[in-house]
Length: 152
Image (cartoon, rainbow, N blue to C red):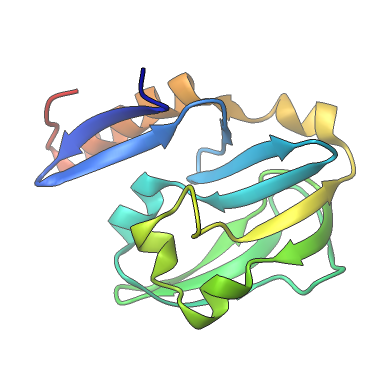
């Protein structure tokens, strides 16, 4: 059984990692014991374009839910990344600073952004979508915003 929900968009396969939590903005959160790993969904990195630069929040920063956890620059645009949860930045992925393209090539693996020590996890999780719900939102966005949808 696959660890992803997936569909085709143009010639690309878009995946949503099962068991993660998602924001409508396309960020994911993965619970890892007392910490939460955060990254960009496959859909967001694909629609945003090739990542040229990432500026994550500083180590030790306190980030509130929906406040900027980083800025992502792609060949198309630069945009703010709102945090899925509130917490303190405990770790920044050093690999994406040197190779930001990992966000495009492996958004659920080596392309993660930061790890937070959550402040209000139970409340924050209630505001996030489960993978199945985010997958349905992604399919709807593909149809309405891009007019294309492949097979599942």
